[in-house]
Image 1 (cartoon, rainbow, N blue to C red):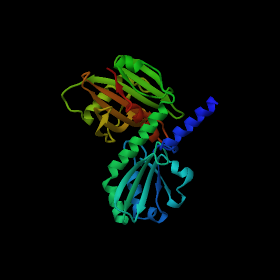
Image 2: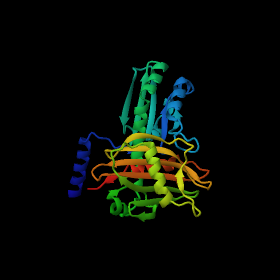
Image 3: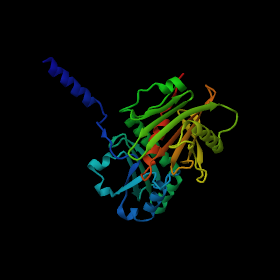
Image 4: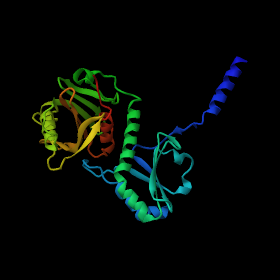
Length: 317
């Protein structure tokens, strides 16, 4: 009798709760479902969507798209299709605007609704809000990658001991080197490796620049990251222009730098992504230098994983 009363109470409480049960979202990372009529996808709107959201990622040795777009006409957008984690929905013949909807059909989920009275209005909305939309989608995907990483995180305490920081990274990464003011994390893959080196320099009054980042990473790599044979070492490929931009990492001022690396006197190279974080409380600049060696394979997903790991940074008190 007591059990019956208990279950009835649970049911009544559930009925009083207006929130609905939302299923888990699905989809590959950085894959976006685009809900748009076939005719619009093949026309000017589709061209603008592809140009804006499928542009190549800078800093990779071969072209790889920022987002993979999967087009779907509205008539078949139902059932399992609605569980996609990232969705762009085009609504013609409506008032001009952009609306962001979270977790409507699944969780986590972001739906970017772009509307306009005609094709020109919709294209204008895409162009004017491109950076904002890309930021929303990217941040959502980074959060999802972080969530996946936390399913099997490393329990090493080396980062805390050496730098008094923590990073969330998969347990498959091993410590290739742990020294004073230097740690090298490495994940071996079938075709190469994914790497993250962490080091620091004293904070100065000089403003961070691309040249400074390259000089520091090259000086550290020459000593700490040897090549496959005696006298070889990793360095920045100066024939490919490294590009930097200001970012925020855990509310800290930082700079992101992307480019290519190579090993002197060896046919080895690949992409790198460096985050230089200003830690004014501890009077230092923390460098997180991720680099990938994976000849003959796509590398965007590896760089993305390194981004997610670095953006999990926590500086301990």
